[in-house]
Length: 143
Image (cartoon, rainbow, N blue to C red; front, side, top):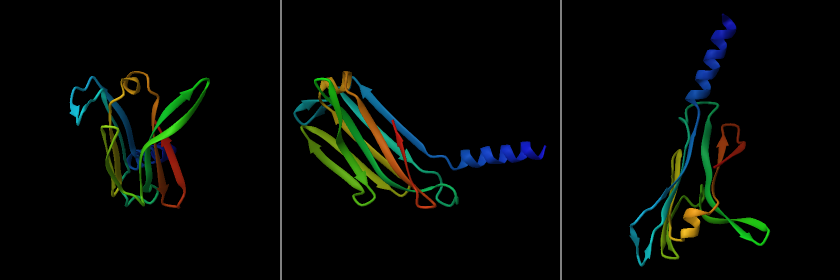
């Protein structure tokens, strides 16, 4: 019985200190962006659990969106947008599309308006978050 109680307590502790990390791409968007038509909106969100938990992540260090660029048989990941704990917000226009993101307390998000139909249909896109835990260790998650 004591082992079961300890296991249940441990699982509840993990659930209460978990973080969320979402990556979505909406297609078939028909909203004009300056002079170009959008084909999609990419959103990446990371939220940490309550900061008062001793074993939780305490800070988001960075949130970055990458695109895989393939030339011949080789591919490399190219950074499209990034926010960091040192550069906490981003708002710019790039190639006719909007890029917006910010880190506020224990939440970070990046939104990219996609205008290249190839990116919306065939693009390999990835979102990566780096977090610091209460012992100063750096962890990463990738979508």
